[in-house]
Amino acid sequence: MSRTGTLRHLANEADPRIPFPYRATPTACRAEPELFAYEHGSSNSGDITARVDQATACAACRLASDCLKWALANPDLTQTGIWAATTPRQRSTLWQRMVAGLGPDWVTVVAEHDRRRGTAEQPRVLVLPDEAEPGGPRRSVPDAIA
Image 1: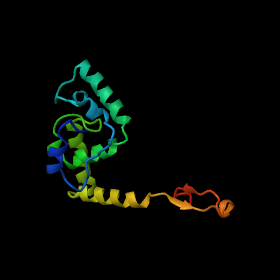
Image 2: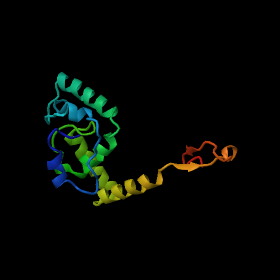
Image 3: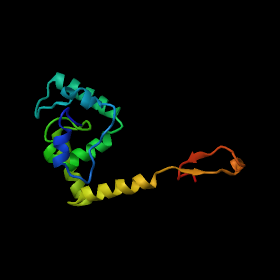
Image 4: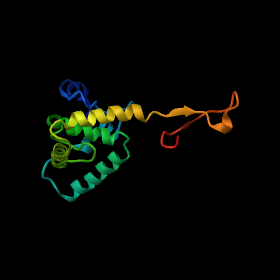
């Protein structure tokens, strides 16, 4: 995802429709940026081990999908390194698929979907019939159940 010291630089040039994924506690890529360095075309056994480590770290990160969206929306800023467990070549392929599937303005489509999803998936507090007594406990019930 990010490299230490580059957040300000990236924010100035990045596509504003997809916000840069941020987390108060450092992610693996921010804590150990050297782990996510990647040289195009290298494929020795050490690189394979590194790719497994990168994929494992990204799989454990709650920001991985947002990281991938940001990297795809900003290909000029992510030409090197591993972002969301993907290499530059893999991101190029994914970017081409996004354009083919959603059109040349796919970033707007994805950003709008994320915006709608963000407001639609907010949990609502419902009073269940057996808890309708004054002072009774309330609990959140997902919209899919309600």
